[in-house]
Image (cartoon, rainbow, N blue to C red; front, top):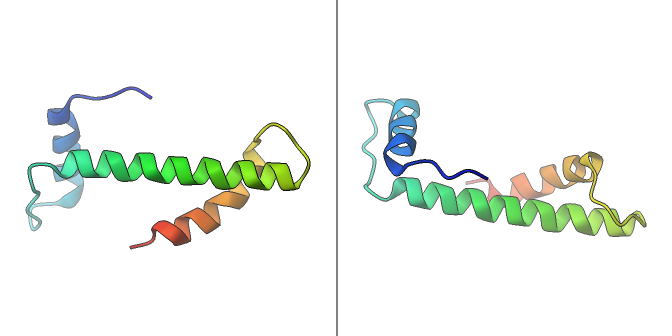
Length: 76
């Protein structure tokens, strides 16, 4: 996963947040860490589903099944 310069990430976040929201100076780091935690939880759940189905490899269908549960966990 490529890492982008912090200034670029902040510009993207500010553009999506709009002018009515103020952004703290470390919001890009927090969003990156949240994203990494989400990916880790998603892959953990997908690998559990794959093992339950008797497969060694995690496939797209396992990730799709794990997506719903993981998104519910991370819903704010």
